[in-house]
Length: 108
Image (cartoon, rainbow, N blue to C red; front, side, top):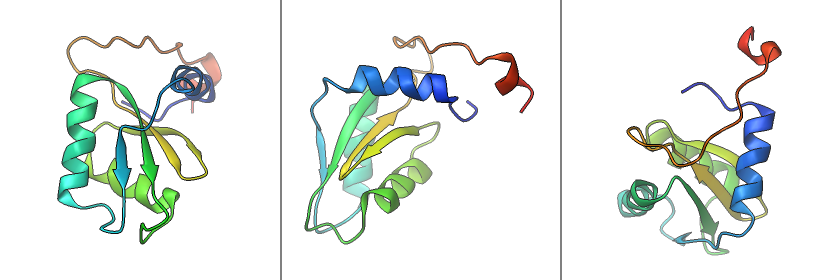
């Protein structure tokens, strides 16, 4: 999947607004266990929130980059403070229908 368009990111931000963080990253940082927790959560839902605790060794942007690098086809539509929204569509039966990219995005 290509990068998300601004319209698609806005749609995912709207859907994520009501969600509570289900994975917390603490003083251990982005460990294999943390990546596995995020992967397991994305296997049951397509959109999750991850909370980066004060004790984490890195900021939310670095944590988000590490998670997205470790999990195939995942995207970060939003980072607010220490909360990261992560999206990964279900490969077989996606529940979230993203808005189609416009003609400007198709040519980019």
